[in-house]
Every structure is written in structure tokens, then in C-alpha cells.
Length: 369
Image 1: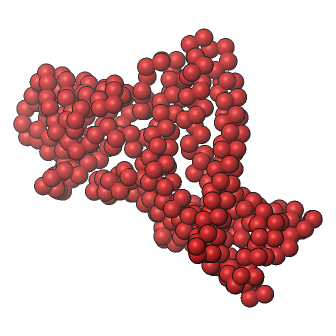
Image 2: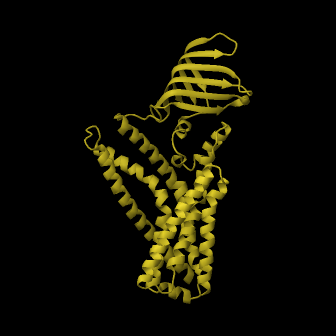
Image 3: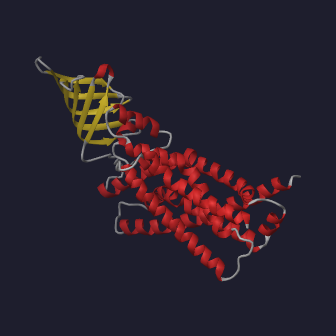
């Protein structure tokens, strides 16, 4: 059997095992602290069950995974490379003529697919769980075990309709009745023409949104230049659905990767800025390459022919400090992009490009030694 194929499977297996061990260990610690905090918040509350507390803590943890994932990958790679160096396996591999990048190639491929699985499979689950966490937070605050309120501050949405029309939809308050129905009070739907002049206004005491239709109750219809009409029920078709309303009250980080393109198109068509959603979408697309960069960074510090004594400790400390410095710097650059100071693609891609260039140049130097 081919030596390199055996080697690739061996080191890839080691990396993946270490990755999941580190991931579950870190998530276990975070879950413990989240549970303690949830118990502290619910202490003395007879209306809160233990199962509610568990859900509250578990649904919160998924948002943390994305933050810690690059560091988990880096730590897992450091452990893998340290063991290879400690057992002199790396020396044997190099003595067989395997270059540094040939050694890293299978690990980079495995890391890339790990990143793809994160954004296509895990991210939708994490977004759904974060959404449920927001519901649980409101239930804890309102002491209503069935509450599914999106906002007590009301709703304001601008929708671009056919024939150049623009719809302004407002509601004083709203809450979710079930997965497909939203109940709103004091609803106003205003139709504007291409010149932004008011054509028709619908004022309802309350309304329900179900299957892209507003079911308005006790409606006053005001058409420009005509007497006011009063009707008991009125069905108003719209492209807005429950998910669109949710997107108005949650952060882009809580929107699924698969829903982000439709959300971006909706905002841009409605005339709103979709910069934050674009930034989120681009950052998810670049995340597999960021994970590869963290793998290369770990290789720079831990892939040595000999690692003994205090040298290991110093390399671990320096690599962790470098990783955290890179992370916080990337967040600063990301903030510049969100606020429009630099192009979106540059703020998202620049940190990853820098870590790739720096790590690759240092690996090339070590490969020549």
C-alpha cells in the first residue's frame, strides 16, 4: 500500500480525534458555567422547571461554538503536532523525503471539509437553537410559559412590491402564536407610488400574518381622494413571512447560512442596508480557509524535529497569544467593514490572507532548513 496514503489517514485521524476531544471538553466547561448562571437567574422561581433551565443553557452554547471553533482547531493541531514531534514520528516522516506542505496537505483538506460541514450543517442548527434561546429568555423575563414575542417595541418593515409600489408596514406590538402565525396589534399598511406619494392606507385594530397574507380585522381603508371605508375583515397579500419578521429582531449571526442570501435580497429590494448580513455571509464563506490558516499557524510553532523541556511551554504560550491577538485584530477589522470604513470583502478576507501569507512563509523557511 502507498506510504503517503497510510500516512495521510493516520495523521488526519489523529487530528480529528484531538479536535473532537478538545471541542467537547471546552463546550463541557462552557455549558457548566452557563448552567450555573441559568440556575442563579432562576433561583427562587417556582414557575421555572429544571428542564427549562437545561434548555436555556444548552441553546445558548451553540452560539459559542462558532467563536471557539478556530481556537479548538488550533489547539487540536498543536496537540497532534506535539505528539508527532515527541515520538520522533515527524523526524521519520521528514527523513522519507516528505516535504512540509506535502505533510500538511491531507490535514488542510480535512480541515477544509470540516469548515464546510460547520457552515452547511451545524450553522442552521445553531441558528435555530439561538432563536429558541431568545424565546426562552423572553419567557423567563415575562413569566409566561407560552410566550413567543418577537418585540414589545413594535414592527416597522419596508417592502418593495410590484409595479414600483412601496409598502410601509407598522405594528405597535406583535407576538408569535405558532410556527406560521403572528398576531399584531394597531397595524398600519401604507402603499406608496413610485414618487413616494401615499396611495392607500390600511389601519387595523389587529391582524394575523399567515402564509404571506395579512388578515386584517376592523380595518379603515383610506384611498387618496376617496371617502374612508370601514370593513370588518380584509385579506392583504404580501411577500413577508414569519421568517422575515424574525430577521428584523435577531442578529445576522442568528440567521441560517441557507437563509442569508434570501434575507440579503429582501433587504436590498426593500431599500435597506444589508451590509451586516453581507458581512456575515462572507465571513461564513471564508471560515473554512480561516481554519486552515489556524492549522498552518499551529504547524509553525509545533512542527519541529526536536521539542524538549521549556521550549514546548514557550511555543505553546506564544502560539496561543498569537492566535488570540489575531482573533481580536480580525474583530477590529470586521468592525471597520460593518461600519463601511473599508470594503466588506477586504475586512472579511484580509485577516485570513495575512495569516496564510505569514504562516506559509515561515513554513517554507523551516522546510528549507
